[in-house]
Image 1 (cartoon, rainbow, N blue to C red):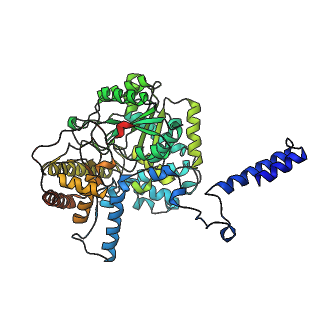
Image 2: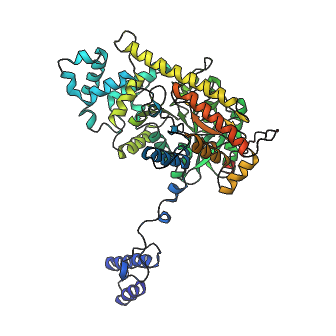
Image 3: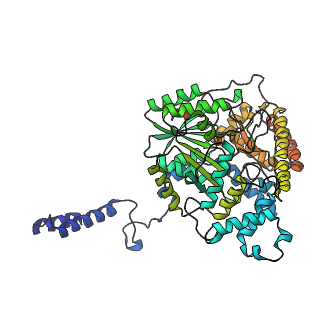
Length: 547
């Protein structure tokens, strides 16, 4: 067809007229279709067999290559087992699945904060505010807060808000940040999000321009970061947290890693810090945070501060400081572009399914912030229920208000229980043969290092799997306990870990600890026991140093 069209145009002597150019373009398109193996087929009229319009080979390879271990293969197997138990289809040596794979407190029995749910109930059903007996059911401060929000949110919870979030919500969040840090916060720098994860997507989309763009990410890390880097075509530059030093962060190591990345041709755009740590649970010191901010200033990096566990600190000698506060203390707020993330899913709130969060953006040029707003606008707006819950988390009842005592009691009970469960779990893990676990200073997880028998390592290799995957799979099948292999978070070469929450209730955590201990002893014995000499801690991160 292409040859016939070109001959016709040539014979007519009109190869530069609009019609000729149109004919050439159409012929070229047809030629591409005819020579492309993925061209549309006319079914029985075509020369070859009809191709399926969609297959695993024709979708985005970045989606295929991205991995998210927190809900990966082990969890999918656990979901099948849970369905089998519910439907009575199979027999297992346990009667329920215990979900220790993800920080999802309410699925394991944590009760929601009463004040939050009461305000949300009135905002969802505002006609209750005019009910003659409203004050017999709801405290006065709940009614006042709901009336403020309903009045200030046009159209209520069923209408779109501004793309960055309802103005009243952003103002309340900014007010709370200013109170927390002792420095002003501007509502125009606040972007409400459906949990913290969309903010990570925004930053990946904004900063990753070409395949050599990269971000520094801690190892071990929350796999959201490696997964989104893959999705958006970026590269992960790992920096190792030092397990032997309580998962500490060494700035000299950061300099080595960024130098090596740049020498390999990468353009490092940003650094991710998770504080308190996930999966490691460590809390950064104030000095360490100053060092990180100085490093980002020197290297001209955007700092992405994942601070969703800021309420979860369990040791008396540690205190949460936001990177925003430390940057202000150092006079670097305008010199280091900073993105601070928070969420209602963690802390003592645990409203994971409500999907609420925010990011505060400072040190960004106004024209760049316009582009962030564009990204938010493409998604229209975050959900209003999550926005309101986020504002309530940041602005809880105050001393003297009707709901304060109940709120304080519920918050203290949850955080106190989490502290006891963390200590119980870590202590039990450290009593197991070949297991060491740093203290869970914060967050919701323990990340123990497990020395495995060589025969178990070889058995995993024969399956094409990581050794800690084998351990977690057999743990699930023997006990119903769901944990995540450390290889899904990254770890030093030659070491094996798993991440577990300590979210099972205080009534259940003892049974979980006992079942885990019994399984561990049987696993070690099954695979021939441990050698006396423990392997030295390596310094590479599962090959990630190759960039």
